[in-house]
Image 1 (spheres, one colour):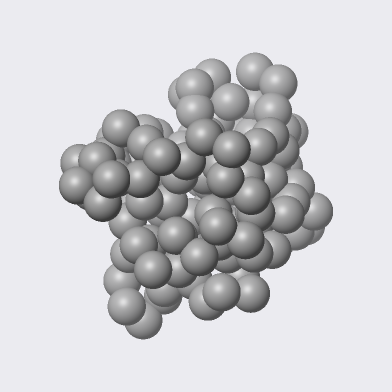
Image 2 (cartoon, one colour):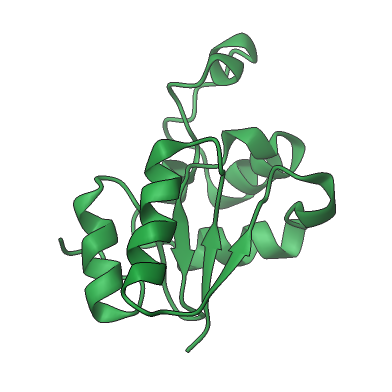
Length: 126
């Protein structure tokens, strides 16, 4: 199983997730999605949103200043609108996100990260 972490190295929660996974001995592919060279394509964002455990809208950081500045209101957005928003504004992607090839889970609350490390896969239960 390949584990891919959508990672922002400037986010303490994301750093904690990477540390938990690597300390548990898991090989993790790190995707620094904010870097232009590692930005997610539209098909990649769509795949993540479709496999996300929970509502695709949860993939958006709604407390972000950019979210407010753009005047976004994600309540009730469908999958296509979420994907379009994230492709245009990758900084609004919630983090960390673990993709185990089958499931995609947001690593908040932090207790989920310990469950990931223990299980070696994207799990929702803490």
